[in-house]
Amino acid sequence: MLLPALLSLLIVTVHSVDLPRLPLVPYPQHVSLLSSSSSSSSSSSALIDPLTFTFSTTSSSVLLKEVFDRYHKYLKLHDFVQKLNVTLPNLEVVIEDPDEELLLMTSENYTLTIQTNSAILQADTVFGAMRGLETFSQLVNTNNYSLPTLHIEDYPRYKFRGFMLDTSRHYLSVGVLKQLIRAASWSKLNVFHWHIVDDPSFPYCSVVYPDLCRKGAFSPHHVYSQSDVLEIILFSYKHGVIVLPELDTPGHTLSWGAALPGFLTHCPGHGNIGSDYGPIDPSNDAVYPVLKKLFTEITNVFPSEFVHLGGDEVHYGCWKSDQNLTNWMAVHNISGNYEELEDYYETRLLKIVNSLNKNYIVWEEIYTHHLDITPETIIHAWLPNWKKVFQNATSEGYRCILSACWYLNRISYGEDWQRFYKCDPRSFNVTAPYSQQQLVLGGTICMWGEYVDNTNVLHRTWPRASAPAERLWAPEYLTDVKFMEPRIEAHRCRMVRRGYPAEPTLSRGHCHVEYTWATHH
Picture 1 (cartoon, rainbow, N blue to C red):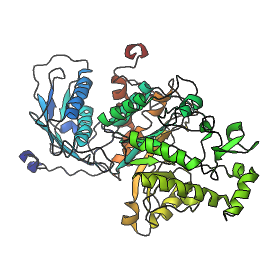
Picture 2: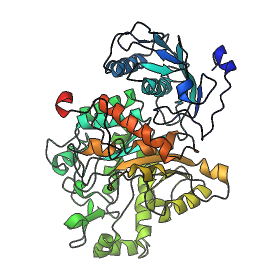
Picture 3: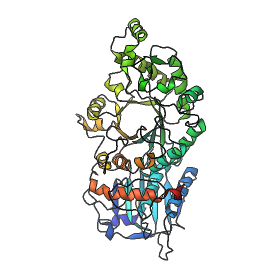
Picture 4: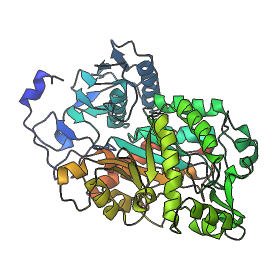
């Protein structure tokens, strides 16, 4: 992408110690002010009228026009006072490939140049333009509708920037999920890891096995119909977010049992959450056709190139207490080591998923228990010893993503976002730095569902999730909590202005526009 001729006169050199103080979250890779100083106070400005400002493009993309509509609404939320000195009437948006699919490796790169009388956003894809439009909207000073004149070259540090929601332990409505997805796009996250079912409930309404939903959900009202799921997928796509479904097996499957007799291991006194049943029974050959039909449906419904297979916290005590299973293991030459039994199950499951031409992600136990996995497997680390897991897994050529230090459900008093901000997925010991660190695809910010539902998940998630979101996008050197502090609070107030009930990040302060529940419902 060519820069305007004016930029050739620019003499600013930006380092981590003198970055422009701009209210951007996440902070871009490269920012150059169109001035002779790195201080934003000496930068020239462009002035807009949010009521008449337009986005222009020669692209025929229907999606891009929907994105324009969205950001027009954000601009018009400001308390506007008519001005006579407007200098910037529109933003020109240029897309190189408007038909690019939304995949993990899809380019989200963009450049943004704002001058006093003109502005241009250039991107490889519509999804890169989305990221650039978010940055543009964040630059608008809501007090006087000015924007600094600058040039930004931006792209994500990590391709995989996810957030996980658990909809089994407590149900989250479609409307609330949409609000969470919308907020995630404001922090440039691109994967919604939907932990859709678990032990407590099975809210996903399967077409091939409708009784899973009928008998496994909390009630007929706490479910996701096929139309609900498609609505979430389409909404996410329009915000540049991939929906990654997770069906966690062989553990965390208690809610499957009512619809599938004989599917789970029967182990009275040793079952999950006080029941008489534990993980899926690997010895039952009838299990695997069910899994094939169900995963075939999942891979057809969800367009993501990945599926998450879970594999964590398999309760070996239940398997061990089942004498019939022990006898079966002896006949099949599987020793008393229950990792071998798990390996038997996972090997058969991976063959099923491989036949469906889907890539897959697994929780780290699949790797640390030394199961026989393929080189394409992506390891998802969630336990405290994640650095050792990454060190070993990447040395063996496995790709990895991180969640261990980004569990938002573990709340604490005070500014706990700071500890999230200090964690970096590549801060582990390596013998081959470039090759090993490049195998770290990014990470996932997790909100598990034990103590959140529609009443509190919105404000508990954001803007705390914006701290790790910046770690996944922004330059590696950007680690200064003090530099982040005013920006995350500005981001929080921006979310409030847009109608989202984001909680405070500082112990005192206010937003120019305060959130009022009645105003937004």
